[in-house]
Length: 198
Length: 172
Image (cartoon, rainbow over all chains, first blue to last red):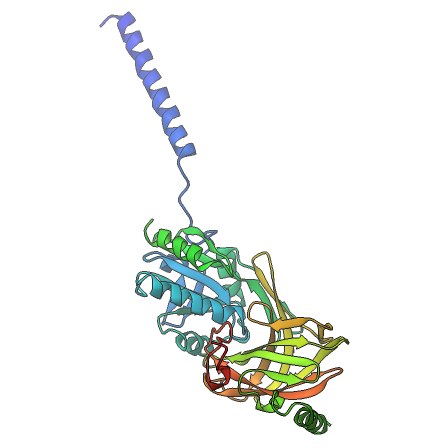
């Protein structure tokens, strides 16, 4: 090979190297981000009324409806428990097809045995989640949920303001949307149908 | 005092409208008439095991020309009873104790229904069981006190469905 053709070959080769390098960088920069588990991707670990720990990784597997509440709540929380189990029944789904998960935001009063008999009194397949204050803060951050004690904590019957959304989580653990409190039943059912057949 | 007022209301009811009105305490058709006030749509929700609180609901109509106020409620079924208002602010549920009582304006109807106002029974003596009744004494600023029995419906009941019993003949 003449020095001239060797030089041309080198130019072609380096050009190819440059194209591959730019392309790989672009693919890395513009690839869709991996979807986080839960809403924000914050990790959490709560004790489950069904036994053992429930972490963000346990969102993988089957679709879930997740909501927050507390046992001292006489209105929204029993309503949400009733609606979610009724929707699941109406769609002919088994507990393994769609998990219903109730996480308490009142760690100082809601112990595991209290939440266990509360949710199981409703439907034994409901998964109740209980943590300490830090664990509760973590799971709230994982879903972007809000709660705040309203009134003096030395009042044994203090109230807690809290997000009343139902978070829909897909089988891959990612966030699919919410069902609002008082959402029309047909809208909620349509959303759940989409959730279980993504 | 409460007994006296109640006895007075009872006597007044008996004297003026013996056929049309049942005394409030015996309002087993779900309605009670008490002075200028009509109480209807009364129910409580059954409570889940270990639930320390329960919710009670009713509708109050003031047929009088003066405003009244539901100032307090007591029950032998719970350590205390408060009137609460539930409000949604965005997607956040907020509950407030109406410490100054619940106004019942003249000529108006105020409904305590799920997703709005409720009587909150705190410190239950025993769970509210579907089919039982929960006694509650309501005290109004003008009308005085009346004892009613709230029938216990399901855990997530949203209201009283009108049933056509013997009392409803002709209204079917």
